[in-house]
Image (cartoon, rainbow over all chains, first blue to last red; front, side, top):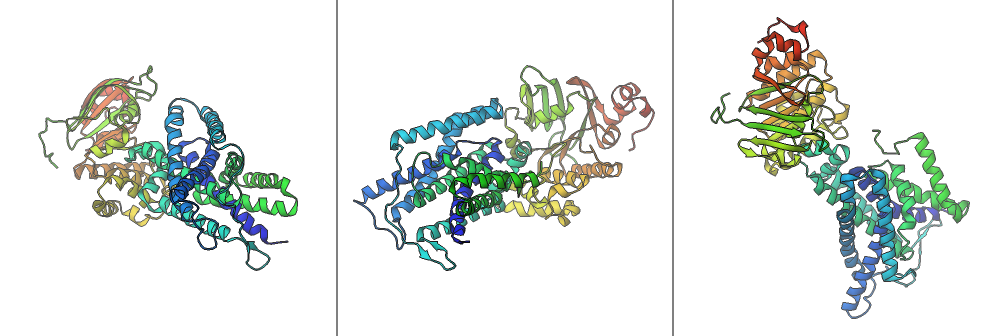
Length: 302
Length: 254
C-alpha cells in the first residue's frame, strides 16, 4: 500500500478539523447545528481572494511568491484580514437571524433558518463571483520526495504546520485563559455561568468570531490546495458534522482528531476502493464509532 | 459581628415581587422580604409555594414582572444575572451548582474573573484556607466529588468575590444528616465573617436553628414572618407549614 494517503488524508483532515472546531463550538455553546457553517468556509476563501487581489493591485501588479511557496506576502496579510472578516460575518448572521430565533423558537426552526442562510450566502457568492472555479495562484508546484514513497508540495507542508499552530493556540485559549474557562462554563451550564458573573452574550460573540475565523482558514487551505468555488464549503458540510460528532460534540481536540480520522479514511478509501466510495467509508466509520461510543471519542455523556 | 451601618437600613429589600417563567403565569405573586446586614434569613413554605422561584428571580434567573429589589439602597431589579455578582449579591443554585467538567480550582478561578487580577490569587488561597478539603482536591473534576464536597465548591465559588449577601437554594437537599449539619455549621461561620445569608430550605428544623428570622411563603405570597424561635414554637404554624404535628412542642436547639 502506497503511504501517499497519509499526506492526502492529513491535509483533508486538517481542513475538515478546522471547520469542525467551529461546528462543535457553536453547537456546545448555542445548542444548535449551524448548517451555514460551510458558507463561512467559502466566504472566507473569497474574502481572502478579494483582499489579496486589492493588495496586489495597490502594489502595482503581482507580488512575487515567497521562497518555494505558491503565494506572496499579500495572501498572508489578506488571510489575517479575511479571518477577522469571516468572524464578523458569523457575528452579523447571528445578529440579524439566530439571535432572535434563540430567544423564541425551538431548535429545529434555528436549524432550518441556518439552511436558508446557507443557500442565501452561497447564492450571493455565485452572484458576485460567478460559479466558475478560481484560484489564488495558477503557478505549478513541484512535489518533493519525502521518502517511503510520500510526496508533498511546500504549500502542503506549511499548511499542515499552520493548522497545528492554529489548533494548539485555540486549545490553549480554551484551557488556560479566563475567556476559555468562561466558554467551557457557558457550554456546560449557561445559568450557572451567569450566576458566576459571566456575560453570556459576550461569550456567544467570541464563539462566533473564533468559529468564523477557523472556517476562513479552512477555506484558504481548500483554495490553495484545490480551487475556490461557491460550493466549496457546502460540499464539506457533511464531513464537518461527521468529524464533530465523531470527536464528541463540544470537544475541540475531538473535532480536530475527528477531522483527521474522516480525512484519512477518505484518503484510504480513494486508494483502495475508489474515489466514489470515500464519503461512504467515512460515514461507515462514523456509524461504527457511534455504536461503540454514542458520545463520540472525546464526548462527555450528559 | 455588629453591622457597620445603621440597623434600620436593610441590606436587601424586596417589595411586592411578581415573577414567573411565562409572562401570564406568575409563580411569585407579590412577595416581600427585608434583610438586615449580618442576618441569616430563611424562607420556608410548602412545596410549590414559589420559594425557589422567589430567590431565583432576585438572582436574575427568572424574569420579574413587577416589584422592586434594593441592595444597600440601590435598585437592582432590572440588572441581568451576571451584573448582580458585581453588585455584591451571590447565588448558589440547588442542583447543578458546580461545573462538573472543570477542576475544583477552575470552578473557583472562573468566579474570580470579575475581580481585579491582583486579588484573584489571594482570594483563592483564602477559600482554600476556609475549605481545607477543597485545597486537597483542587485538581479533581468537580463532578467527581461527593454531594457534600460539591456543595462546598458551590459555596466557595459564591464567596470568591466577597459578596455582601449570599442566597442559597436548599443547600441541604440530597445530603446525609451528618453533612446537613456540616452545611449549617459552615453557614454560621460564613455569617461570622460578615456575610448576610438568605436561604430557602425544606429542612425547617436545621434552618431555623441557625436563622435569625424566617419568612413563610404560600402560593407565591407572604404567609407569615417572624423570629426563628417564635415561628418554631407556634404550634399552629408548625402544624401548617413546618412539617406537621410531629414537630410540635420540640424546642429549637439553641
